[in-house]
Image (cartoon, rainbow, N blue to C red):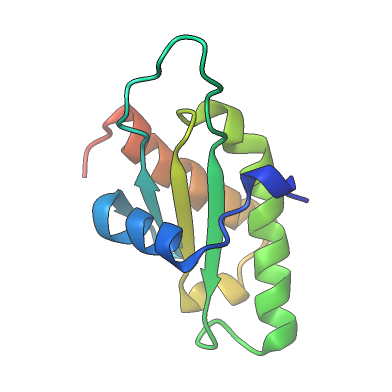
Length: 122
């Protein structure tokens, strides 16, 4: 489970990550990353990285969508430390994600982060 302080909940935060962040598309998902651009003032607490998920009806029925969200939350929990503090992440599942297993989702998520953080080739 993703800790409460790391969950993206407000519509404005989702919009900010999608509209102003960088995007990396993979066959099963699209990842939007908005890195914190404000310089950190010494003595202030660094805001936590927050993640949100978009899983539409195109992925499948309610049971399938909830299973995909659970898998993605579990995968994001392990990847939060490698993201810049204060970042906003939105993971949008594509229709093929409903049939994918945990390892396939992990592979696509890692590849998307590699491209966004490591500057990988398009």
